[in-house]
Image: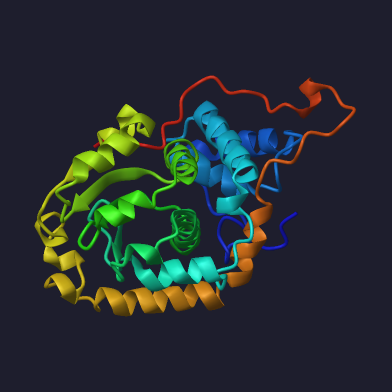
Length: 298
């Protein structure tokens, strides 16, 4: 049972819903409360997932079901979410994870990720996935209902040694979560400074990628300034904002202070175990019928 406000830390009351979607948010929330194995999802969860699924109720049901199941079945990623844990700290000290301050004219948030320490021995893949998910959950809380996200993965400094440390189990969980359960609208994923061994990377992940996500990927050997323009970027790339390292340090501190308890509390947002002695139908989540639409190609 959670004790804090989720998915938005500072919004315990439901956010205002566009009038044309209010009835569907109410209906989805009532359905959520009727699921015997669901955690204590809030009405804001109903709003967030419906928005991510382009206001399609059945798609939102499927995404919520997948979210609860993945959180329950992947404790190495979604349990013990202490930002001060040694594995998470190792990841945060070896990477830069930054939400850039300026949104696009369409209202999209830019997220930038790169290595800050290129030593492959500093990467524990499961802890990296865990840290990534924690960072993104906190950013959703900061942003509220965001029109969309553009992700920039910078491969500068990535080596074959990093590829050798990828674990298939956490990778499979990550790909399933991002494609089927992450409650945001992904608009584009740029892979910049693409490494020469990108074909080996894609050979590893392509079997796990659905066509919708594949259509969002764009690879370039150029830097981010060639993709989104310097007006949106830090000084590292000729832009007006603080250096990536400075923004990372500030956002890391926010996670460690404002979001530490909230992230640990979020570990309870998972499907409950089946109750012994009850019928399978009483334990079941009512299955939706349509596919998740959280991934959208412009």
